[in-house]
Length: 194
Length: 124
Image (cartoon, rainbow over all chains, first blue to last red; front, side, top):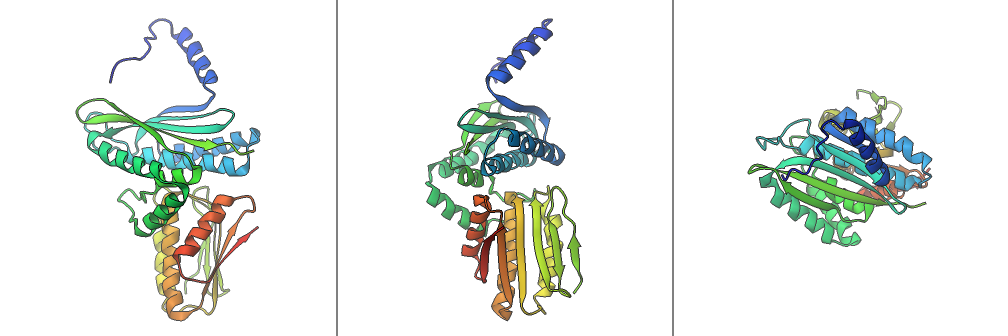
């Protein structure tokens, strides 16, 4: 990956001020980097559940944000790979960002994955993103009937469920790290209904 | 039949499977890290229940939230109930959703479409 990180150097205080400004200007309400396990998942989702109520969003919106957060966090916790080896690491680690503007909330995750998963993830996301709401419902019903739990106890329904619940496409991007791994970023949006 | 009475936690639902009082209920949240550890004993219980079901039995689902892995296990429970119903015609399902929770209502409708059991969807 190209080195674009800011050199903090001796001016750490300045970095903190700019970092804070950036977070505020992007309306980021939560940003985290590190291990993502079940207790982190529960803590963030319940924290946001409480914070959102103050924002006067409808309970449907609040619940969808909560739902998408749980699915995204559990995705990272179950499917992130090691940067060096490309082998799975449990619990996974990654970056997690929640932000909002007037019209929607966004939930973004980023984590390392093995390069050999890129094709299958791309195919899956492109497929779901291309379906209309009725097709998504039918595909979901077909998948839930046929799905078998993986060793990691995932049902493989996370992505399609997000598309179905939010009615929005999942944006995604892969940034190559090395021959074995890439950084996988995915962003889901939840429309704000008052 | 052995009584199952599991209290709700912040990641698993309250479950009552009580043949003596004919009460069968799932309620609350479900997002455990490992769904199989939580749900397998319940599926095993239903397996034995299917050999000698009480007649008739109403299974109530009053879920507040569940993740996708749990949604699969809830379908497994409903399919087990469908199997029992096919043989004994004794099962009814009541699916409750909070009045303003359209997603939970839709989840009920999807399950109702998939399984062939008397299935009522009600708001509360």
